[in-house]
Length: 325
Ligand code: UDP
Image 1 (cartoon, helix red, strand yellow):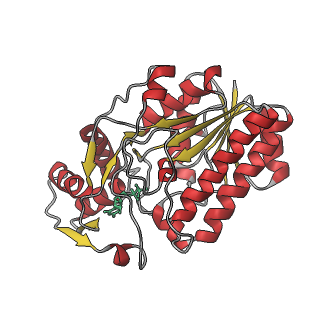
Image 2 (tube, rainbow, N blue to C red; image 1 turned 90 degrees about the vertical axis):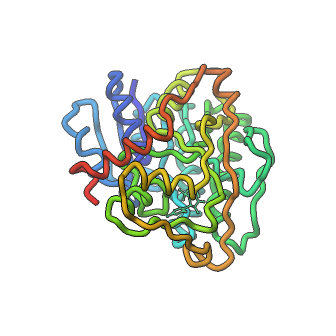
């Protein structure tokens, strides 16, 4: 099978490329290297089944040719990471909305199957945990930049589902919950790579707010497994799926302690007020836990990698040559 991965030089995209190549598929990556990096796919270049194009998904002739060639499209290209969203709101909204518009429009010409990557961020500040796919989305005001991310991805979902319903395009939406693993950079705010780097360098481990907010982390290989099983299942078409790990909800302050302990670090743990960490009036979500019963029921998914294993793998990555602190 021929797969197009937009955002294929990103953290998750590069792992997905690897998995597809490993099972003998041909992979075409389209990535503008805005947040992805060529280093993420360097090791894949010698594989004869691997092809890449450095360009933006909004470049229609380029995207059109690649979509045309593919049997299935994994649309992962997006602006992600809270720091990036707060600092570059215009490109976040434009990339997330127009990029998805473009891919869906092109895929629709020959009804190519598309997996659209969305995010648990769409649940916003809902307190109805665990989040189910049919739960309400609770977003803050438009004056707070953070919510533009959730809103832009929610528009992607509406559009994907509209194409599925109105035009019979075979679309699957996956809402990814805090995904972690090697090659994820801390540059755009993600907490685990940041904590691990800080701990290894002996810098203060920066916990934002009071650290009582919780998250549930999923290892990238579990996410890739779920995405591939969904993509291959016709019953998944037209639906939204939470992809996450419901096994271990952790408070961010406890996470900092665990990273410190597992790295044998002497770093202090520093509590940083949100308005210093991001911007004045920044709103965080207090808890984020997925309900993955829909995923379990359809594909029998069970997350395999525990939080401690996730941390050890990320620590190993940052202490390897590839991680380069
Ligand atoms: N966070 C933190 N220190 C950091 C980066 C993030 O305490 O250096 C917190 C952040 O405020 C949030 C949680 O860790 O409560 C997860 O942040 P991340 O940006 O990884 O993902 P989010 O769940 O916010 O999308």
